[in-house]
Image 1 (cartoon, one colour):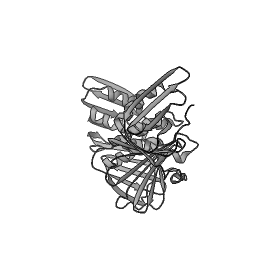
Image 2: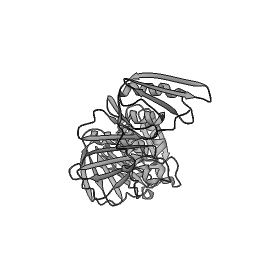
Image 3: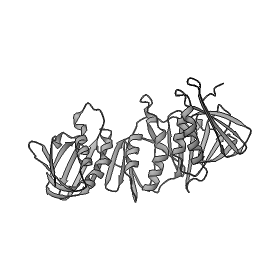
Image 4: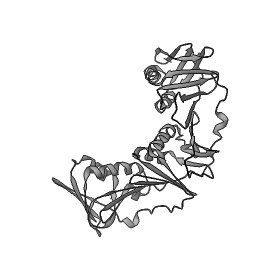
Length: 371
């Protein structure tokens, strides 16, 4: 195998692919990327056996061939190179890989492509397209709230569920919950709920550019096709918890506040919160929201007051500041709308002006106030 490519073009592809490579694996081959050159096209594939990501680009091909190349060293090498043409040559019998640039040469040892895990078989049962900007927004607003608890595998993914004429996208970690509803894209006839691993969605969101994305679903996998990239991920075969039952319907206290103002204030005040509970206290009354934190162990405290529009009886409620900051950071609106009930009931946060055709709800559980 031999081809010439611009280093910046290859780096752009490797940066997409690299996120799939597992940091630790009992299967050394997974620490490699599969390079496949046919004519003037290079295809690069990486997999962790659950997710397979493939991207391709046009190159100047001299010899067709396939080889698995150690991912980390290759990525680090290409990242360190100046933006200039580079030639990669792989000897088919010894698997010796040589990278040649205008002022240097680098050698590493690859592996036989025959040992690289094959791509999973995929037979689509549903396929539809979506604007990439919409898909990126959906991922941005939901994937952050998934659980990292391997004992609750269903909550480590994002639920896609068809309800009537709307598509619901849901994520939760037990402390916070996001539900996004939008009109079902044409052709998206979901016959069952599916759970997509958060890692797969993060990889898609990081790689999306403009245009449209194609989403295909089989009995066991989901496939995202966009630009010159295809990602195939195994679905999480679990039952998602009944999220609808925890969403409060009677929160009658409402507050509207500038998202950037409350976010900046929270980040400052949270510096003085307990390192264990990260608790901040909201006190809302009339046109003022007071945000307070106290660290009893080290004697620190902070308080700020910002403008808001609050309707309801005076309320004091506590939250984990990390969860509130996370939610507000992923809320795409200048104004944030809060709905409260009592200090022990979940609060609901939503954009004051959601995107047309979309309904976003973010729920966060309160924490017990310190005396």
